[in-house]
Length: 164
Length: 164
Image 1 (cartoon, rainbow over the protein chains, first blue to last red):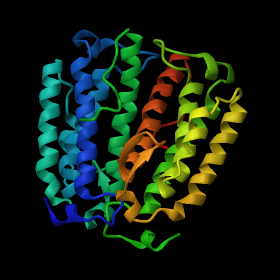
Image 2 (image 1 turned 90 degrees about the horizontal axis):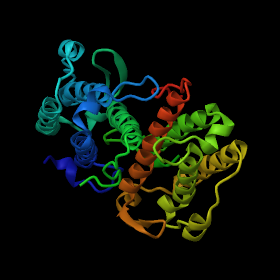
Image 3 (image 1 turned 45 degrees about the vertical axis):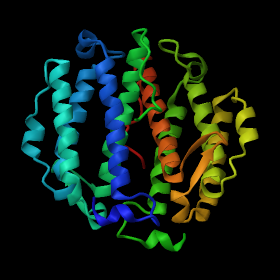
Image 4 (image 1 turned 135 degrees about the horizontal axis):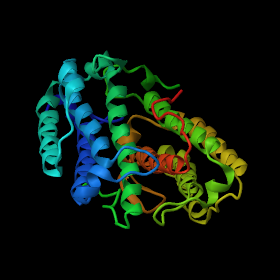
C-alpha cells in the first residue's frame, strides 16, 4: 500500500482503480471457466472472433500493461509475438500470471504517472489514466460479447454485477 | 468548471471522468443511430432483450444518475415508472436530454461526493465513484452485446475505439 490509498478527497485512488480493474478481471476469469471448452475455441456469431481469441487479446494487453502502465516498458516485442494458448487451462494459467504481475508492479504507479503521456505497446499514444480505462473498457466490451455467445449457446452466464 | 478540474496529481479529475462518461455515451448514441429502425425493437439472440430494451435501461439509469450522483436525488419514482419510447427518434431525443442533464448537474459533483455512500435509485448501496463506474461499465457491457447484434445482422458497427 502506498500513501495515496489514504486519499479521500479524490475521484478514485490508485488502490481503488487497481481493485476495480482486478474485479473486472475476476469476473472475466469466471466467465472463461464457465465457457464450454470446445466452444471456447470455435463458437462465433456473425464472423466475429471466438471467445478464445478475444481473451488472447485481453491477455496480451494486460500482460503488456502490467509493466507498461507503471514503468513505460510495454515489452512491445513479446506483445506482438504472443501466441494464443491451445487449452482453457493454459489460458487461465496465463491469466493468473498477469493478475499477479499487475499487482506486483502496481506500487510503482505514482499519482503523477496517471497523467503522463505514453505510447501503449509502443504504438498508441495517450495519457496513462486514459490508457488504463481503455484496457478496462475493452475487456468489458469483449466480455459483453461473450455473454451473447453464452446466451446463444443456451447457457446462463455468471452475473455481470457480481465482481466479488 | 470547478477548481478540481485543475488537479494534475490525481488518478482522474471530475472533469476527465465526466468526459469519459460522455464519450462513451456519444459512441452508444452513434450505435443507436446506425441500428436499423425495425430491428432495433425486435432483433434478439438467445432470448436476450432487443437493443431498444437495453437502451431503455441505460436511459433510465443515466436520467436518474444525472441528479442522483451529484445530489442524492435519484427521482426513484419516475425511474421505476419510465416507459420505453416507441421510435428511435424518441429514444435519441430522450438520450440527448439526459446528456444535457448530466452536464448541467455535473458542477455539483464535489471531490468529497465521490466517496460518499448513497443508494442508487433508492435501492443499490455503494460509494458514489463506484456507482458511476458501474453505470459506465453497464453501458459498455450492453453496447458490446449490441455489437454482436450488428454483426449477426451482417452489418459493420461503428468502431469501438472512436469516442470523438
